[in-house]
Length: 173
Image 1 (tube, rainbow, N blue to C red):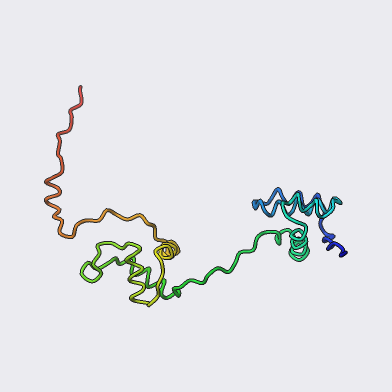
Image 2: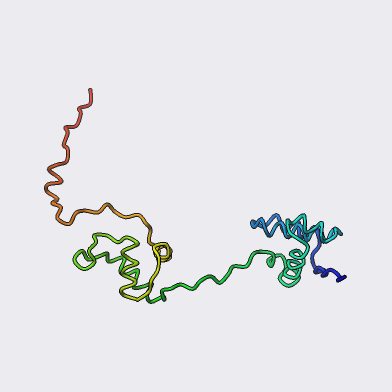
């Protein structure tokens, strides 16, 4: 039967419990409390149960703790999928959105995500979904709030004439 992996000597149970008060990640706190129980002399199986894990998982976290300290007990961010558009293409997308559509060329009065997906495919040859387009627009600082569209043939004089012009009520003296 193998022996357990020893813990670092520069920490103790009390210091790990103090560290939990500064943490905002619940998973890191559970791992710190499980290691504090090991420092207190509890066997690894019971300490793992305190942390909501099995003994092998606790052993893996002990290795991370020994190597990186308390900060090593957080979940590491994954690299994620790389963005489909390059930085230059993102700048061009930003310019396209800011200038707005040309009614004769694009056939729309204002941009929708589905329209931008079509434009990206035509200009860059890259297919993406509307959801991805939402992420790109958010990265560029655009919101999904837009002004109320106006019909291109709308006459301002007719609108002003149509507005109600009720007389103001006189105030009693």
